[in-house]
Image (tube, rainbow, N blue to C red; front, side, top):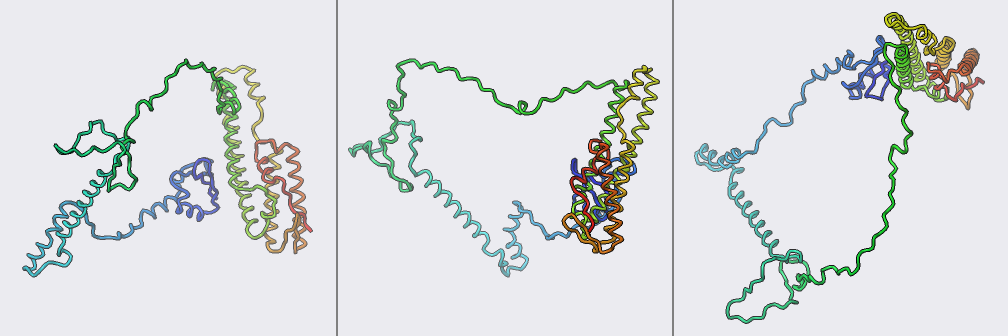
Length: 414
């Protein structure tokens, strides 16, 4: 089994090397992932795993796919010049026999296209400037009478319409362009404005008003004092318990005695694999407990002698709250894991020879039913003993096992 941290906060348990290799090929496991090394009980980069190295080397050895094209053309000024000169070269090579069909008539077609485009641009500009001007685009220049000398044609009246053939809208009146300054000027205020009352100040509710006040951080104790040693001792146990909880969550053993986990068509197999993973995580946690107790006891002996701790400091260390899992709960945990594994083994042996009902189970083999009954009663007694001993409040493995059981119960045999 391989425990892989795909990215911070997301872990996955692969039960075989083939599943791990498939995840690497899919890209779920990449160079940023980490794998749990059981021998050292540490997270290391997955790039150090031999299987990851082999897959990377296999990808590097694969040949590149063939290119769809073999000839490439770059459109530059030189290429266009060569393209125009191609018919003349071809004609000289053929001894004046004639031009190729692809190059025949190409220069006048290009000139014709450019001419049509230029005409379209000129017509568009003329249409754009010949339209009526909007009211806000009036010119500040004075109007000039463009009538020839000697003509007495009446000037256009103020109400005459200005019509443009290029316009698609209705006619405008010239008097619309006249700006009446007297009408647009604001009315004079005869009286002084009344002072309005000052608006009340509103206090905005911020995020810090909703969140509970953060507790002030306690000052860190000196590393050479007994308080500093006890703080590091507690932090080491917290880290070990966090790793244990992460591993058990990966095993996904919630609702351990549900009917879907005891069915022989796949649910039972997954439950046994998950329980095996939990047993492995519990074994690693207990090894870490032994290492923590041994190392911090050695640190206490060295520091107390080097710093000359007083008798009060010595009593403070020996009267510390026990962080290690109590022996009674450790024994109950081992017995419960062993009993669950045996009961699931009985169900696996009788796959297809038992049926599950509403809280009941019936075996075709009478001896298998008797063995199941004995194991069911033993497991129930162990669970009740662990709860009475405070296993649900402890920080050890028994708390995670009781959470996995939850409110489910093993079905009764019929």
